[in-house]
Image (tube, rainbow over all chains, first blue to last red; front, side, top):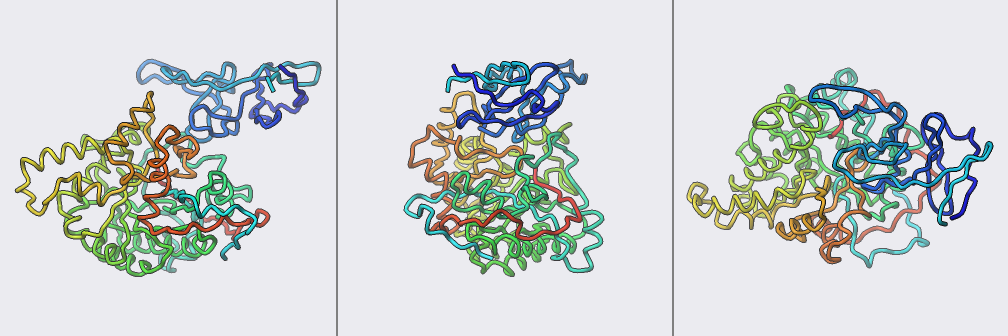
Length: 119
Length: 386
C-alpha cells in the first residue's frame, strides 16, 4: 500500500468533489462534516463518472405516504441514473441492493491529504 | 460544415460498425426555423403541454453539458468527442429533443415538426457524416405527416421517420396508413418513441389510469409499445406494406417474447378474424420490427437477459441505443459483455447498418480545438423526452 499526497486540506470543498488522480485512477475527494473521504469516480452500475454527481440529501426510508428528509450533504447522486450513495460508507441507498462505491483510506497529516492505494 | 477526416486515426472500416440508434440532440432555439406566425407561440408556450411527470434528478445528464454552455447535447462537436469518440461509435441516429404530443392545433404541431427537421439538417447533419437524422412527424395529422416525409425523404442522411408512441387510436388503424405509405415509398423505417404518454390529449399512460409519480410512469412505458405492435401486426400493416420496417425505440425488450407467444397462440385459434394474416404474428415481428436496447433490463442474473435475447431472435430484432444524454442512458462498454461475439456485433451495429443503409462507416473526425459550431441564445427551454 502506497500513500499518495493528493491535495491540501483546504482544497477539498465543503460540498462537491475535488477530483484527483493517482496514476490512472480517478478519485473524488469529499468532505462530510469533519471527515475527508475518497471514492473512485466509477459508478458500480454503468461505469458513469459518479463523483461528478450532486451532493445532496434524500428522502429517508419511511412509512407509506410519509416523507422525511435527511442525510443532507451526505448523499452522492450519480449524474447518470441518479443512484444515491452514502458518502460516509459508499453504500447504495436502496434496500436490496449490494452495490457500493469503491473507496480508499484517507489520511490527513496537518494540511496534507493522503490516499492509500495498492498502486 | 463537414469536418475533415484525419488519416492519422485508425481506419475502423474493416470492423463492424457501431451504431447508436437513439441519440437526442438538443435544438435549443427553433425560432429561426419556424414560420413567423408561430414564433410568438413557441416563445411563450413551447409545446404547450407535458406529461406532468417529473424526474426529480432532471432528464438531462448533468455531466453531458458542453463546456461552451448550453444544454446537454446542444453542441455537435462536443457530442462527437464526449459520446461517439469516447465509445467508438461510428454513427449516431439522431432522435431529437422531443416527440410531438397529441395537441389541439395540428397546424402548430406540423410547423414544429418541420422546424425540428430543418434545424437538424442545418445544425447537425451538415456537421458530420456520422450523424443520421429522423424525420419528426405529427402523426395526428396523417396527410401532413406524409407530406413532411415526402419533403425530406429523399435525403440520404434522413434514415427514419420518428413519431410519438402515443397516438389517438392504435397506430395500425386506417388513418395512419398514409404515413406508412409515404415511409415505404422512401424506404424509411418508422420509429415509435415514448415520452408523450399521458401528455396533452393522449389517453392515460396505463389502461387503468394515471400513475402517481414518474417512477411508476416510467416503469410502465412498454405498455404503449406492446399495444402499438399488437395493432400494427393484427391490422395487417406489414401485409399492406411488405417493405415497411418499424423501430420500437426505448420501449424495453423482455416483453417481446411474451407478446409474440400470445399473438401466435391466438392466431392459431382466431386467424379467420384477421384473414389477411397468413403467417405467424411472430414471423411478421421478426421480419419487420426492430427494438432498441436502452433502457436495457438489468436482471440480477445476466444470463436471464441472454435467454430473453435468444427467445426474441435478437440477432435480427435488437439494435443498440444509448439514449445519450438522458439520465437513463446505457453505457455501450458495459452492455452485453458476456454475449456471443457475433450476436453482440449484430446488436451493436450490424442490424442497424442493414436497416439504415450504413455500409461504410466514415472515419472519426479530427476535431479542431473545441468550440461551438454556432452560438445562439436559447429563448425557450425544450420539452424533453422522458
